[in-house]
Length: 442
Image (cartoon, rainbow, N blue to C red; front, side):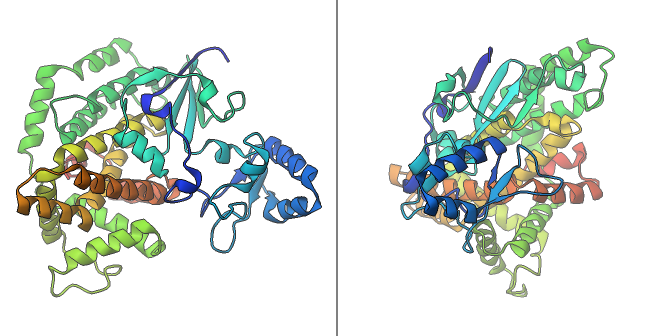
């Protein structure tokens, strides 16, 4: 196709680690295959011999029902332990090893790459459910620098899947101004001289302000009004006033910690054996030690919100004294990745998208700032009254990678689970600007 190709600089040299990865993407996920690649794979396997063809037929099943179609033609039946049956002992895909990338399903060939087409531009981003992608995004060079890329860097340059497409102009003001609005969000997210929390508040304020006239199915009576708001969003004096408000803000009630605890407890109850649930259980048990009357089963009894909020803030202050610059940088990079990879126009309005985003970030921040390993690192540094060494920063990064990619797998990329969270928040009438600040100032 003619047009441009854009991505972040750190994406240019991304490569799957295969058997060297600390985890695998070939476990526990629904692996769908489109008709074209199913038929191509079937031909390749059949040419190998009857034994390979029989194994393929045993593990790959055609879909039926209303959801079946050319793009959802077949799926791979996972083994009883949740692993893909084609994963070999060296943690490599045997189909890939024997037949190359050409016949692989789109998700197998491209994960964790995400490709979207906006007008004449193809955008390449990365899913943070991959540990190597987390390392590239959070620690690599060019995290907020969009550059042109040659599609030759893609696994199949002439055969790449699009997660979403937007033809411009779309004759819909919500879509037609998407790029301009997102550019403002990304500029606000990367503003130097302001804290991570202040930048979140800048974005929420901007979203709330334009949400009165810029939303799904809107027809802008005066496009100049949106242009003026885009310009006002970056006004220096206005940003300084908002920053001052954030600095002075103190939540009257521990609303955010109630929601975060509820979200994690729901996940712990549904999937107790996954990493995020086990980490959350460990975290709540460490907090429960401060409550003699608390039930030992943290899956059932919620900890008292006000004391829990105080304990969390205490841990956060200890960690911030040692790692505030690093953690703010990692969270900022995570935020920018979300803004580029996700499209807010899939939500009814910009503020709804941002409110869910700050809630998701609150859950992630709770996992990081409550993590006993990070807390121990910070306490050791505080006792020595010294700055972190390269070794200690390496230990911090290792923990962050493990938390972020597992959190992304279990919660942040889990749309059905996030829908449950959204419905609960909406039912409690918390999808409003009045409830933004408790999650931002978390």
